[in-house]
Length: 164
Image (cartoon, rainbow, N blue to C red; front, side, top):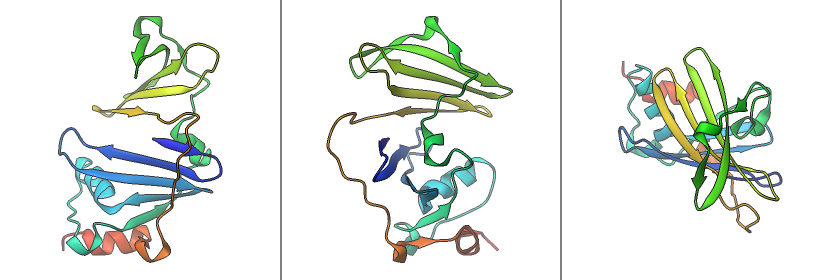
């Protein structure tokens, strides 16, 4: 995951279960989820969807919730130190904080030293696990949102991928 307040946020995901990959972008309160990534998430929740080849490079518009794009890297106030899960991420020593609620649990790995920033998030949601590694702190990089001609609404996406 890469983030810059002016440019937005970019997340590249690869499913260890299916091998499916995709991207998600977020900027100024709008998310752009690649059609293959969204379809994979819907299939994992039991929905029967197939992305036709002409939609593989399209993005579905959405909203990230009340926290906006910050929700992708915000650490909840309920998180507590979890020293037994301290670790190392990309050769940086980290300290862990954890938050849990029902079937959801998150462990945040935060860089130690002068600058405190989130390096990794390990999540469990309804039995599914994911690891997000945050990258490029202090580096120059460019994030480009998908163009309007490569976006669609959720209703349009559902209409075009749901099996009838």
